[in-house]
Image (cartoon, rainbow, N blue to C red; front, side, top):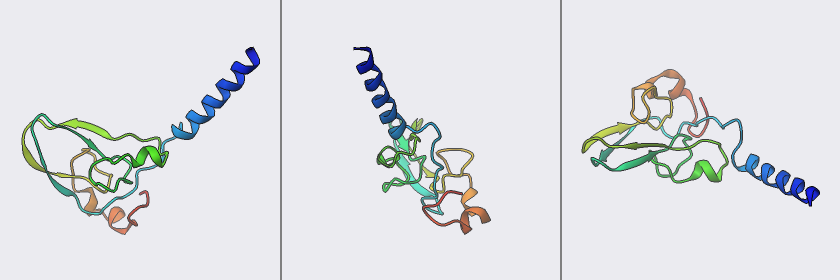
Length: 115
């Protein structure tokens, strides 16, 4: 029985390593301009961190299915208002745009590639 447990444990750990890599992938530039979004007070949102979501600026699960090791940023809107959410994924104030997309580094980068 001990041998079986060892094999089973190895199978599980290799499965975990495949789906949850120890070293996360880099975020990629989804777009080079922010997206204005109307947030509703009290509602929780999941901002895409990896840049691979087709529902920018929000998560569609691409981080999981592409095995990036990244997770979305969950945040709750404190008030109902329109905000600019980052899509270049280089902001220093995630999930909000801080103007980093205007930098030469982001503007020269290819959409879908890491910075």
